[in-house]
Length: 98
Image 1 (cartoon, rainbow, N blue to C red):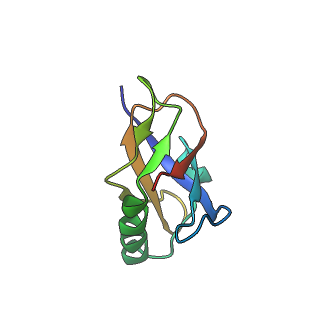
Image 2: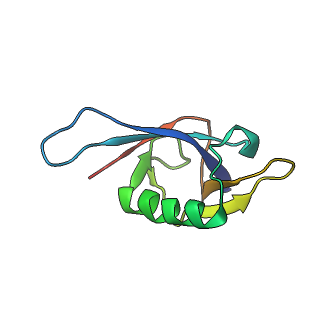
């Protein structure tokens, strides 16, 4: 079964040479997600998150790499949120793998 995981935040972790790992936080609730001011800004951010190959450990069947991030308009609030569909089991954190 797949669930939507909405991005609630992200931060750079300690740099390891030329690469800086990124930590991304998710929630199953869109109202907890980070909101972008426009659909275009959110779509641009989707491309960035897709390039990170974010791996989550809290998926059914073992680790899952998030891909194909999408945009959804918030209902009742201004803004747009980003989500990824996957076999997620809990609210947790994922990290860029490469």
